[in-house]
Length: 321
Ligand code: G3H
Ligand code: 13P
Ligand code: ZN
Image 1 (spheres, rainbow, N blue to C red):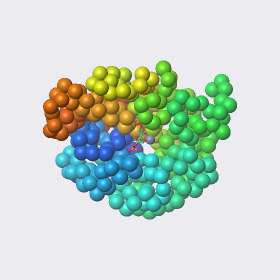
Image 2 (image 1 turned 60 degrees about the horizontal axis):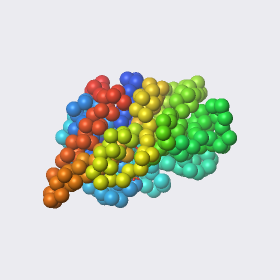
Image 3 (image 1 turned 180 degrees about the horizontal axis):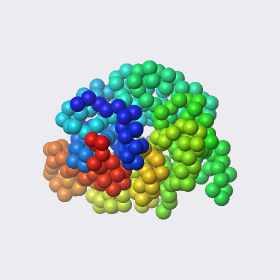
Image 4 (image 1 turned 120 degrees about the vertical axis):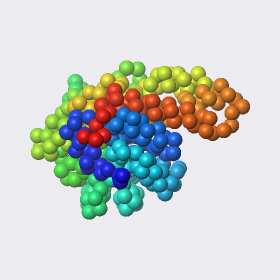
């Protein structure tokens, strides 16, 4: 079975009102864990590859590994470049057959962001590829400069609904990553904090009212940083800080209902893998066969992915819609 196009996965997800898991892959065990979980849960999936993953594993290895995964499964799989930082990198991935790329120029001015995205969109659309852009900056617990009482500040880091409309129109991107309190990594929040789901609703509504339809939004930094995984890592010799905290899964579930079509998860997979490896090596200090710790690591990642598919993204059972 060939890759399934991102466009097709998005359109089915929007219709079925579920979110696609976009899981980062760097090596064979992570890939197998994700694909086996999706196979068992009958879920479509987006495999995403960062610039760092390409540097770590070699683009050819990753491409061949994904080809292998696609050939042993029947579930729909799309391949996406995560956080492309230049036109050249995006072009490389488009030429390699990725079904979508992200160009992340969110740190640039609005105008520059539009310009960089437009260049990638023009190339991608000529080569049967779709593009994710980002507007706003992911800064975790930080709120907009000068924002008070839930108003929107154009100068801030969160995505502004009207600017989102203008950005999508001018850049031509096919999906938009939003900043609504989400951030990357294991230290997103301090204590109990939440996504700005009202803002997410306002962005979705503004895009709809502007005639852009049921427009696909993307949630980066969607790891929940489970406390039990942090505790397990620390129990077996790790030193994750006490203040690790992620996006509550209930918030992601609401974000899905409001219209986040693609949900990016990396940190939680890293934590599951690390917890399992640490446990085996601490309990069996004489062990030196990598299969003895990579197999349990793969199983733990798979369990975590199954949980996300079923209980958070609600895409389980939708592979063959
Ligand atoms: O959002 C970034 C992803 O987690 C990829 O991380 O650049 O370390 O591969 P990476
Ligand atoms: P987390 O590492 O916080 O899950 O974020 C993943 C991500 O956004 C990849 O683009
Ligand atoms: Zn991201």
